[in-house]
Length: 176
Image 1: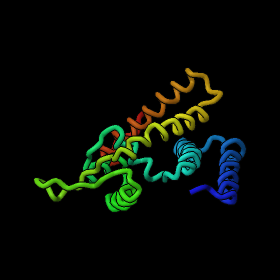
Image 2: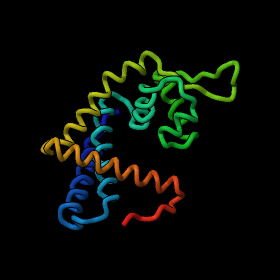
Image 3: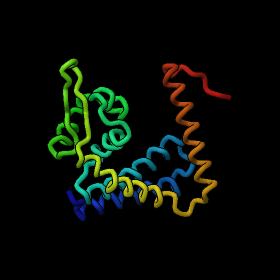
């Protein structure tokens, strides 16, 4: 699952265009676009590192959740990951074939499918978490600790505000 030179070149060109957009073309574009582009850059960086270990980015999402709470139902895992159940099921079948998880039904409840990490899936944590930490360290390089903490607080406040808006069905009044 190595990334080809052509794919790396495409990714680098995308990154250059995004940077040019933010620094030159539209430096005051909407916050949502900046957050989205930053998240895409995080994803590209982590995806490249995961690929070196033949782990798909889609599997990373589920592994992170299961490392914290093993034994969730397929539905619970879908909700926590923010992914549709059919997509989760496809990913879980692939993860099962790779030996990362087992899918089980209980005799008392044949309706639910429970997801459990295997020893191999648990062991991936010690290999993959440092890669994510590395990406975070790269992203925060050159940002003073206080500014990084302020950015984190600001993003958490935005997340809280948008979560309240979502809970209100998009009807929450704009502050101000």
